Image 1 (spheres, rainbow, N blue to C red):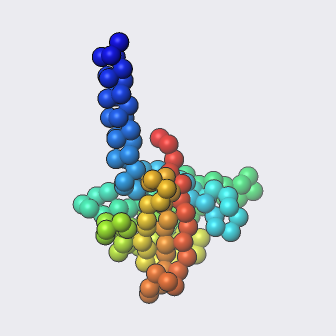
Image 2 (image 1 turned 90 degrees about the vertical axis):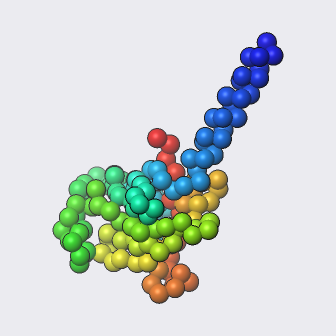
Length: 149
């Protein structure tokens, strides 16, 4: 009986440690929320490649009267008129202490690219993403919510 209890405790600690380790990185699937309406906007998958994070839109939450597969008509770079689903909107973020900085974020609705930084919150369950022009104080933040996969 004691061996089973000890084995159960060890398994619990290992599982909790692994779950905690997963939440120290923004890598994963995130639900973005419109900061004006509070409604879900998209699912963004963040991956890491060569030490830099990038985020690609996997799904859009659209109303029945909205275009279900919109393109980035407002974009002025190579993403112009490309489908928003599958589009990379976050790039170049690198770990800098407790933050991820030095990146860019695209607002596909406006076609504008901003400097960006991100910070994990609430044990890695929330990601505060800030887009700005010039300095971070001249920008806007959104809180993204980690999706269970």
